Amino acid sequence: MALSEREAGVATASTRRSNVRHRLVAQVSLVVVMITIVLSGFFYTNRHQQALIDLREGGRQMRIAQEALMDAEAYVLNRALGDRDSEYSEYSRAFEALHSRRDTYLARLDPFLKMPDGTSASADASIKSLEAIWTDTLELVRAGKLEAAQSLLRERRSAALIGTMRRAFDAFLATWNSHFTDHETRIEIGKSIVLLSQILIAGVMIFAFRSSARDAQARATAITEMDASRTQVGHLFEMTDMLQSAADHHDANAVLRATAGELINGFSGALYVFNNSRDRLVLSTSWACEEGSPPPEVIAINQCWAMKRGKPHINRGGSRALCCEHHVSGLAALEIPMVARGENLGLLQIFAHGLDAEKRLADILPLSSALGDAMSLALSNIALREKLRNQALRDPLTGLYNRRYMEDSLDRYVRIAEREGRMVSVIMIDLDHFKRLNDEHGHATGDAVLREAAAAIVGALRETDVACRYGGEELIVFLPDCSLEDAALKAEQIRERIEALSGAHGAKVSASLGVSSLPSTSSNSADLVKAADTALYRAKHSGRNQVATAPVQSGWRAESEAPASPQGRLRVAGK
Image (spheres, rainbow, N blue to C red):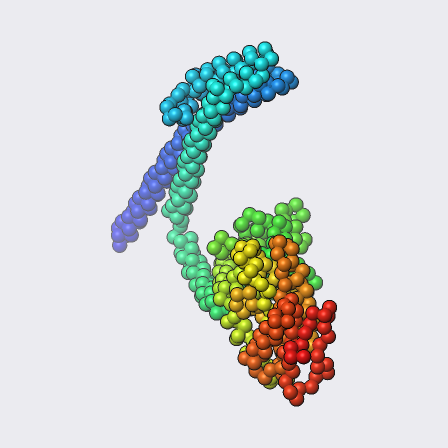
């Protein structure tokens, strides 16, 4: 029994020694591998860095030579044109710079030199030719023969030769820059490989020398974290599924508030949506914020480091920390820019209080980023649906609603008016002599006039009014809760705004308008449009550029049966 225990002890000790030996061998092997990788990476990057130094110096010397050639050309041209203020020393220094680089650098231009006739040439021969031309030119200038000097430059085609040299310099420098970029890329790849190898080796070493107790603890921790992660993923999937059903920003905000309360409980936050027209972030929703310090309603893009960097940024509470201009002092905030399909959509803010606020924010960065990604996709989908809806319901030329939207909306407004005993009016608008305007001034001018007329109409309407393109140059406006008299006055205002467009495109612009109203002139939506259209044609037949109203139905009594006629332009059809 004692022998067996001793043998067991020996076997255990032998096993331990064997394990220690194996661990030592593993350590030494890993250290050797790490040193080999580091040294290889050092020599690799050093070789490419030296090549970068050589390329940088070569490019600098070639730019000096290029500038010297341009300076010499400028001196000769100025002298040939009669400028006496130019210093000959500048010309002399320019050619000294060229000659000093002739063998070392300028010879590299030869493969890029192509003469206008397609033949090859050398940089040395080209510079000598230019020097000979310019020497003869300067001699003529000194003799006071400026016209002869200018003729000499033209006859010997110095400008063409200079152009060839310029193209050669540009082609050379472009190739040089390409080589430079290639070496930089190789250096970055080498550094990345070395860094990745070190990280992998460090991870393997840490994993190899963990004790069994710590392994067990790590496994238990991993299981706990996995369960928590699984729960978080479940919430995120549920959030994503809910966001797919969100019809607008209000729905998306509600989903975000509910999910944030579950996933990052103990933190407050805010969501800002990017306003393209004003280039700023507008507060969309917030949750769990203190009543005394609400988030700002608007944030300028240039005030936010997260938006400028395109990366998450933590605004720390310390006085010396780098914070956004909009940041509230004393509060730690994690800011995550929301981007989808390369488009800025908004900003997600997570706030925390306390001494460990920054650490807690850093801990939830991955989860907060996932929330931001989900909201980014949701906002992008909402914007896309709205864009598609507008494309389906709006006229692409004028931006007004199309006829399909008009018919659906008018029926809806008429039903509401009939049910609640309200009024609804329609204004039919037709641009006068629009075909002649197209024929005389072109369709581009016609399109511009149509767009400006649409803008003029929209500018005269209330938020509840709807303007649509009925077809061609015909537009239609319907006005809820508006009597026939008020609609006629509004039509006259629109007519004046359209008439004010005359002269902008060299053409006279005017419109004829017909007005009808329910229930005073019509009993249903079809009659309402038909009555306005009939009144419109009465306005056209009466001389155009005026407003006509449909006749009131028999038996109808209003406070004022016929509207006033501002400036004598408003007519009542049938009177």
